Length: 587
Figure (cartoon, rainbow, N blue to C red):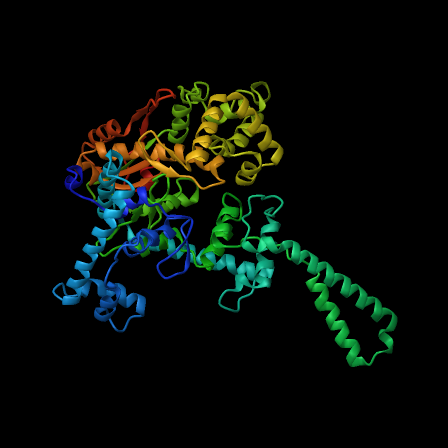
C-alpha cells in the first residue's frame, strides 16, 4: 500500500480495465468467440497473454501450467495436479526463470500500448492505490468457524434428502440418470410442484427464459400439425380400422398416442429451470427449501459448503475480489459474500464468520441509501432528496408519488398504506435508473398496470431526476460512454443507453465513495477489513475499546457529494452492534 501511495506500483490489469475494457463478445487468442458480459467471463480478457494478443504485441513465451503439471502430484487428476504443482516448481529451474523473464517482457509491451490508449492521470493512479487496498483485504482473509459450518452443511443435507424423497413420492421425480432434472419427467415434476404452490409463468412474469424460447412459435406450429395428423388418423381408425389386420391396427394406435404426446407443447418449453432460477422463484415462499434442494441437486453448493470449500490452511477464507464491471463495483467470489442474507432462517449462515481472534469483535458499517443519494446529488432534485430527511420513509414517498397521498395514507401500520408501500418497494430502485413499466413489472413481479401507474407518478413528481436521466442518456448516445464526477469513463453498449447510462452513474458513485473511505483509512485500519459488500464494510477490531475504532471508521466512511449541476447531499454511515460473529454484527 505504501508503494502504491508513493506512485511506485503499476499493474497492467488495473489499467486495462480503464483503457481497454472487455467487449461483450470478442475473438480470443485461440480464434474462438468468447463472451465477457460478467466479471467471471471478463477475467480471460484481462489476462496478460490475452491482452498481448488483443493489443498485437509479443506475449508470454511459456505456459507455467506445463511446469506445474510436471512437478505436481502424479496421483492427482490433471487439474488438481497442476494446482498442486505451482508451489513445487524449483525457483532456480532455468525454464521457470525463462518464464519470469518472458512475463516481465510481455508486461512491458502491454503497458506501453495501454499507456498510449489512456495516460496514468490522477484517476488511473487512484485506481492503482485502490487495487492495493483490494489486495490487502483479500490477504487479510476472514476466519471461519469450520465446525459450525460443517454442522449446518450436514443439517441442510438431511433436510434436502427428505425434500427430494417427498418430490419422488408425490410428483414422480425420476431417480435414475446423472441429471434427472433435465429429463422431461423431471421437468414436469418441477413444474407441477411449483404450480401447486402458486408459482407459474403467469404469476411470475419475471421467470427467466432460455435461448429455446425463440423457437416456441415453431414448436407450437409443429404441435398443431401433430394434432391434425393424430385427429385424421383417429378418424380413419374409427371408420376403417376394423378392416385392418391386427398388427397394422396396433401400429396405427401406437402412432396416434405418440402424435398426441407431441401435440402438447410442455409448459416448461423455453423456461429456465436452472438452480439459480429455482432459488429466485422460491425465495420468500413456503417452498424456499425446495428451491434450495433443487439448486443443490443441480450442483450449486449450499452457503455453508461454499464457505468450507473456500477455507485455506490458515483457517481463513481469502476471497477473490475483482473490479471488472464498468462501474468499477467490486465482485467477491470464493466465497461470494454478497449472497449471504441478514433475514430469515438464512441469517444463521453468517454465524460462522468470526473476528480475527477471541479478543476481537466484528463490526459492520454501511452507508444509508447510498445509491439513491447519488441520484439525488447528481440530479439536483430537492423533492427526491426529501426521503433523506429525519423520519422520512423513501418507499412511502414513492407510493405517494405513484398513487397519491390521499389514496395511500400516512400510517404505515394501516393495511392499505402497508400494501401500497410494499408495492412501491421493489419498483423504486429500478425507476431511479430509468426502468420502465414493462421491465419493472417483470423484475418486481407486479401487475403491469401497477408498474405503469408507478412510473407515470414518479416521472411527474421527480422531474429533475428524469431530466438528469435524459441528459446522461444523451451523453451516452453521443459519446458511447459516460463519465462520473470522479473521472471514471464507463463504456455504454449501443442500444442500451436508456438504462445503462443512469445506472452506471448511480452504481459507480456508491463505489467511489466506498473507495474514497478505504483510501482515507490508515494502513492499519485496512488490515482490519474483512469484507466489502455493496455499500457496507465489515471490520475485526479489539474487543476492549471497540467504540474508539468504530468512531474513527465512521469518521472516514461518512462522506458528501456536491457535483456541478446537482446539489449537496450528505452520506451518513451507520454501525451495528459488536458481534462474536457476522450474524450478531448485522443491523
